[in-house]
Length: 454
Ligand SMILES: *Cc1c(COP(=O)(O)O)cnc(C)c1O
Image (tube, rainbow, N blue to C red):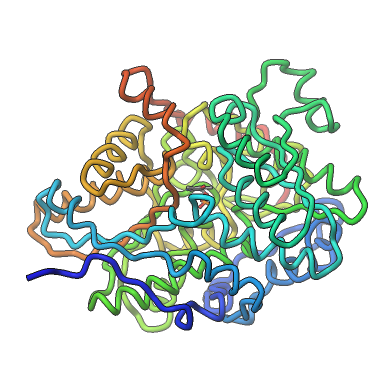
């Protein structure tokens, strides 16, 4: 008997609202703090940097459902729904009784989930009369998404790309330039934040934290220009809930409900995007699904970081955020999963982890590529190095099911494909990649340097 492998929604069934989990959380995230006044942030405090509508979404703890603007939904229809796929090939390769499903966000035009928020952010900027947007990008997925979204809504985009990725992944730069964006490797001499870092350390390979500082500085110094961010912030994760809301309907079509939802973790947007719509049933109806974030062992903010107020960027331009952090001055090792090289976690996820409503695991670089290659051979899709972390965590859980004989249902998010990351696969296959681990001692040392704010 032939079994259905992929589940799709019609255009009419694409969600019309995003899900704002803050409204349903019993313990709300603590407020971001204005570092100058030490007062809780109001939406107005964010208006100089972000579009107003996005600033309001960021701090909204009352409305569980936020209407997706018609213009954004029309753009979603070009690539959504993304398929929910039953990973029969992977199940067979692992000889596991677990039912494994993945939501394939790699089919978006830019190859990752990032476009879901880029379109929304560009739309709100355009609507409010903005002409230019700036941003940072690590591996280049967010930069690519924003570059395209800016073009769609008629905005100019300037992107600071972390230098290590700019050099490791030249095709991502070309992609951004093809969409019409201006791309600068960060740290650069074009901003004060970049200059400070380069004079102290001329060989600095950059980090997302530094690139964020540069992009914010440019936005603050340019008229009619707003800054946009591809992860970490609550409004970004809000837009990504379109993933989980679709998956919820698609899992129902498959006649199943997940026992576990797994995603890789950079700042939390693809994790929150797939997890929060399901987590709402844990909160409201007492379901017992497990939610597992898979982070790199070289940047382990969830498994080894501390929960405290910290800046979102290297230079300290952002509000202070209550989050699990390795310290905003943390310089992660140069792993290939560039999208996961960030020192902190979003405020919603941080609160959820603190309240034990979710779990986190850390994955070594070599283990992540081993998982990515097994998945490639079993399912034919070459995953992004970031997504390989989710796959590794999924494999670990599926193998536990094999041991216990349990037929658990596992859903993971395939956040992107790896076709522009083949240098990384090359290096893995030739044996020249290595693991990087941070010791608790290194982290403690780094955290100790932070000013205790609260
Ligand atoms: C950016 C990115 C990530 C990490 O960011 P999150 O906000 O944690 O989702 C993961 N996978 C891919 C493919 C990415 O582009």
